[in-house]
Length: 142
Image (cartoon, rainbow, N blue to C red; front, side, top):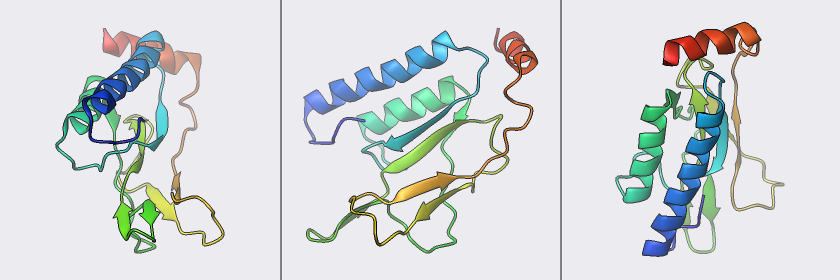
């Protein structure tokens, strides 16, 4: 997602990016989705960009899983120099794919040169990638 520079341009760029994601889901109705990356907004934020993400979630039967607390890290972005730590990296997943909302973990790899920790999402997808499932899902959507 576009970097949050707190300008109107960022909100416009963010809306365009969410629109692209909506276009992908519209072109593939009945399929399951997993979108991941740096959303540039915290999960529980109430700003305009966060509202766009939550609208995308609600409109497309997606979920924004919680991070499991197995490794006691509550941030994915870190700027040690500036003392800035945020939870900006997320997955959006079709609700038919995840069994639990606690399926995402942060990987604290000290050898990672990025200012973002990797995140991993564990799920079972057996049987979901069949043509029958897509046809059945399309019927349920109409």
